[in-house]
Amino acid sequence: MEPNETVASAPALDAKPKSTALEMRGISKTFGSVRALTNVSLTAYAGEIHALMGENGAGKSTLMKILSGAYHADPGGEIRIDGKPLQIGSPQAGRRSGIAVIYQELALAPNLTVAENMFLGEEMRRGGMIDRAAMNAAARPFLERLSAPFSPSAKVISLSIAERQLVEIARALAGHPHILVMDEPTTCLSAREADKLFAIIRQLRSEGIAIIYISHRMGEVYELSDRVSVLRDGGMVGTLMRAELNAPTLVRMMVGRDESSFYKKEHRPPEEGHRKTVFEVRDMADVSRVHGCSFVVREGEVLGIAGLVGSGRTELARLIYGADPKTRGQVFIEGQEKHISNPRDAIDAGIVYLTEDRKVLGLFLDMSISGNLNINVIGEDSLTGGVLNLAAARRRAAAAIQKLGVRAPNAEINVGSLSGGNQQKVLLSRLLESKPKVLILDEPTRGVDVGAKSEIYRIIDDLARGGAAVVVISSELPEVIGVSDRVVVMRDGHLVGEVEAHAGAPITQEAVMALATDLAAAHAA
Image (tube, rainbow, N blue to C red):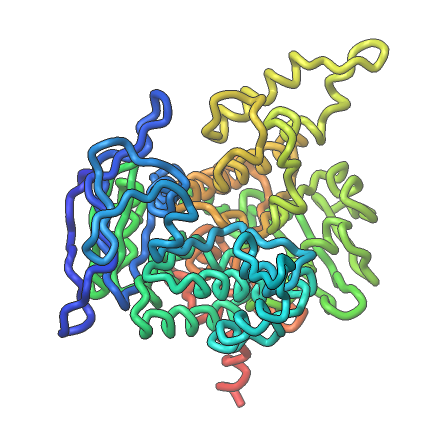
């Protein structure tokens, strides 16, 4: 499909016609010599959830920032709200026009109250002083509308991530929006919290708000959206109605190739008798969350660890890596026991761990790509007198960028300025610099787009084909099944079973979920 080719464009679900809340016509945007958007058009209807999908860099954020007034479009395009042409010159003008945007990175002041955040910059005053009682009273109906379990006077710092997101939604609703943009709203939410958010989104749709929902997660798009529009390389590829949604079509629209090339499993290990066990964990446990877990990973094999949120997958990985204290358990590399008390011991033993939270626990966002890539092997670059060999560090960084396909102009820019997928590849590159024998990858594609996912799957396959033992932990069942040769399943801190393809029969989501939810035991009883 070519940019601006329209797959479908009319509202699909209701028989009655919907009023047009938003029309963006012929929107283009250039940054210097870079063309970010080319003649993009988008229509959203009142009472509709319209998903917007595309790889990082496809133009989604740029288009929404033009809608919000944060960016100005190039001359020639037009934006209409409720049929009226508007020039949106600033975010304040956008809000006054009925447009509210909730970004992926929540923009709240943690030491202020809920009400103070909701009316930040538009505080109510009496006698020249901020009237907190009036703001609390004005905030309360919006919080009640969302069934928020906290008061307007609660400090934001005391709230969970899911509760803070409710504050963002309440703040948006206080502006009485006609159009609500939500950018990756479930990134930091559990499945239960996401379900509650979905109920709120459906409620807002029923109230006639046009919702533009940006997500990389196809399951969410299937569950929520009335229509889906796809951007690729700054152009609008097309729009699908709900009845037309399917993974192969969406993948092809987003990345320009078929889903069949998505997962790579060319690393299939040899027959059982010829496999060499590279990594073994015996009876790993902590005080309360992990209970006597044991497994093996063979040379050139990808072992998946599946389970519901809270099943203990990440906790098990952190115990193996020495990030958390264990009460018992042994780790063996190629038959030799390794005594691991901290992450440095693990790295020295040949084990690396990709954390599920790259921004908080993985990367130094204010450091350069080169600085991040070299931090684990910086001792290798020492010259006489302890002076660092910066030229060697730069060469290593340049080689890593090329090998893993990190999209960056050079190795000296800050990691924090990269897309999620490129940040993840930088973190992977850093781990690979220590030449590990075992890689534990916890949610390796969380928060990255479809194209970056495909590239990370290629990297996992390359590692396995090179003989490494790879452990992949993922909450996305299609992913953990698609990349793994075997899948072990955790439930309530225990490894409760294993699923492996046999005689041409693939691993199925049903088999994994039966173990993860105890359905197999219930059926047997």
